[in-house]
Structures are given as C-alpha cells and as structure tokens.
Length: 197
Image (cartoon, rainbow, N blue to C red; front, side, top):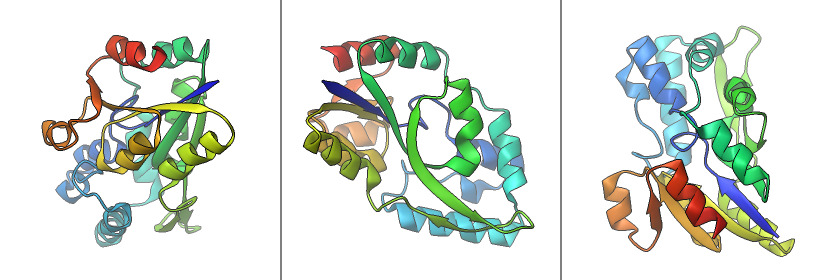
C-alpha cells in the first residue's frame, strides 16, 4: 500500500504569506521556506513583523479567504485518492489555512497551531513536532506503507529524502540544481505520472 504525501503551499495552493505581504504591502512577509531553510527562524521573523506592524489573525484571514487552489489541484487530489491514501504535510497552521482545505475537498492535512490572544494577536506558534514532514514519512514506513512525496521548498527536503520516491514540484531553479538527484515536475499531469508509477 502506498501513501502519497504532498506539500500544500506552492504545490496545491499559492503561498499564503506572499498573498498576505501583497495585501498589506509589507515586503518583510515575502520570505518563505524557499528563502529560509530554518523554519523556526522564519516563523520568529514573521512574529516580529506581526508585532511591529500590528497585524492580527483577521488580516491573515482576509488574505486566505481570497485565495483559490491552483487550477486543477482539487481534481489532482481526487484522482490520486481513487487509488492511494493522500496526506498533505504542511508547515502552515490550521487557524489560517482551513478555508483552503475546504476548497481542496477536505483532504487529510497534518500541520501546526498558532497561539492567538483573545484580541486576535498572533503571539506564538506550536509545532506539532520538529521536522514533522520527515518524521511522518518515517512513521508511515514503520506502519508498512511505501511513501511517495512531492514538495517545492527547503522544508520539504527531509520528507523527500525519507520517502521511497521524492519529487520536486515547480521548485526554484536553485533548489533543483542543488538537489538534482530528485525528479522534477512542473504540472499535475507529469507529477501524477511520477507518483503513480
């Protein structure tokens, strides 16, 4: 039995933080896991920006509610789900991304939690576990599953390395050049062919 693990942002939906940066005109929020390898460093940076700019959870909701999955993303998941277990492994947060889960047909998603004050300030975050994507793949292996995985960023590399097959999807050229051992896909048709072989 095979489990297919997919990243969320950059693979199935646009980058939430980039959308927020554009809506608020705050360029400090443009940084993503494509730019900073250390996720804790990235989130600490984001929390500082939120505090400095006075942004609240409602500002993120405004950005997320206007996002749509990439064209064909829901059909892609639906097609894979006919023959495989599909799990979304994401470093996003339930409190901000749930509207996108609904638009994707409510697939299984493992992600993290934000700490939000009663006044709507984002005061911290709780990672499910450190390096959850890699550890999830290893846990699925212990349960007797083969795992194929696809992602687009530095925080996906552990997952891709741990999987029986790892695929970079629409990844930056620098990442593809640095990790040329991974197969590449730039559209859902090609990605599906690599995941179901």
